[in-house]
Length: 409
Image (cartoon, rainbow, N blue to C red; front, side, top):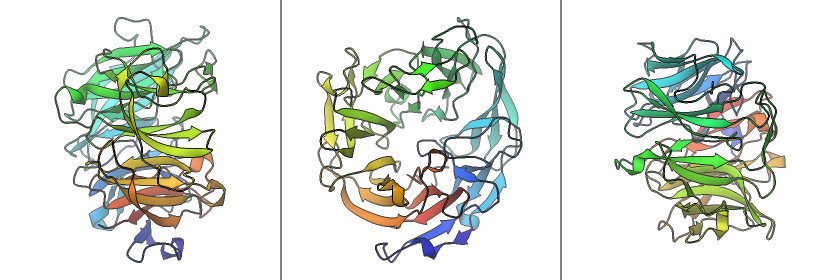
């Protein structure tokens, strides 16, 4: 670790500290702000080396996931060694990490689900997928770099391309792995699911914890090998909630009204049923933060869905330009990046008020990340579960690195 007081400026609070966590010649990055990478005590988490802000190259032999021990001067130690390791999730009790080794190819290869203790011991193979998924002709490939684990630690979800390399308009889909039974079940497939961002509810309630937040990219275009040539089109993406068994498909009341569109990032508000997204609007020209509740699906109408419930969290912030964000586990604190992104990208923290009613309050500017803000170097800020420490990426040094800011109480 290296202290970086030079990243603070005259607008930064006096009582915060910035730490550069990685410093190799190879680029390093946080996994993603929605990824479940932290132990629940907020003392250890996972990041990765030889990676960019949206993942890594499955053929890169230098890529490793690392554990960062915040109580031990942010010491880093590798937890994977296999080429192709991807999509890690830390178990809710913080004792272990599930991850995949991607040896797939379109229409073939194999996908290996592994487990290792968060202390780096006890590597084991849980399941190998080297045939068609149960009840389907589909073989997964183009593995999504993010998995998500249920709050009881029993299920893991992962998305992938389901094409065969020959069929135009082939589907993408979502797989749910039963970690106790070591089985896999595909619960969703279709051509529009190329960028699913699956996220299990953090609720501890036995019913609600079965919900998955997912993204649908309407009018996307993909070739037969799963290469996306248009990520979204038309009226834009919309966001849904589905049960882990593939039932009870619902819609979030955002976007698709001709003026508002989903930027493509959303997350649960802590353990609640409320979800937050970043939207763009043409009139006024803003990037807003909107929370909402899922409502019944009636034709992908987004914001115009009947009975939609929503709350503008950024309505008291002048000319909002928010993009990526995250909450603490209890849904009390919030961190976000904000434009202008052509001048380095700004980092803010804020506090929540009444759920579904109040705007975010006590916005506090932390720093300018001095980042190029290219796609591979997005800031992607997130919080430790206790909300006391924030994390972001920056290539201010010329190479992408992972950073931490202690945001205090």
